[in-house]
View (tube, rainbow, N blue to C red):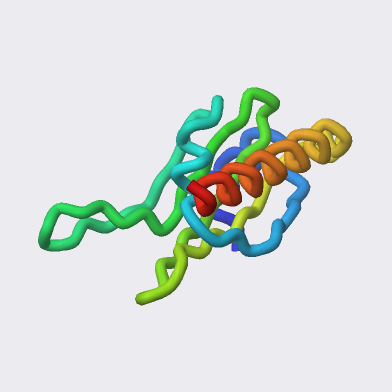
Length: 116
């Protein structure tokens, strides 16, 4: 199911193509926060201690890709993020390069953090 934010964009523009990426373990949301992305939507909850727990976040890239991240925290386990990217079909080649670089850098960052 497409997020309402994306559906609203599509009602004003054209329909987006969709790329669903594999499940990513670890602090993927934190990693994306450090990138040159604009946070355009988020869904979160707050516990009694004032800790924010994000369930959904949408980022907009400089290339006008929309990265929809669904975050699931499994007790006594890793945080798991599902990544879905919305883009214009004519941007496929650019998206492929962007995504390849993003995932490679994330993999390197998580590997480096585990070894330190």
